[in-house]
Length: 160
Image 1 (tube, rainbow, N blue to C red):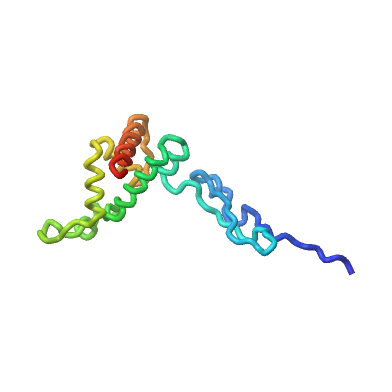
Image 2 (spheres, rainbow, N blue to C red; image 1 turned 90 degrees about the horizontal axis):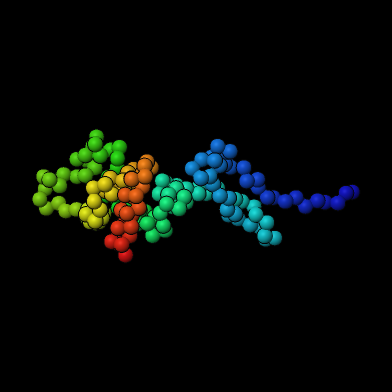
């Protein structure tokens, strides 16, 4: 009878992500999720390197970590305030509520925070920060990139 061979249970890195996904938006990283008692990797997870355009600008070195954090905070306030780009024009009253008709209805904390953040920015900065952080679009130009950088810097100073 022959010797019993030990087989390694190391998963291949292409087991879950397709080659197209590996090249898309900065690719994915492979992280070990589970190990057996010997320390061998049994299960891996594919995690996207970039999830939004703000991550892309940070990865390219166009914005700093503090600017990125300010942009993420703006994006969170943007979505918590109900500013959804596809539904607001069609269902404006439903999404925003009927504050104009009810004098006792107040604003949410996210809406107040978003208005305070927009008050810090000038109109060009508001436009590009709104597009990049809220609508997940590229700045698309040198002037708009400068406006994004100055706007995110102003927001990071405002919140810190």
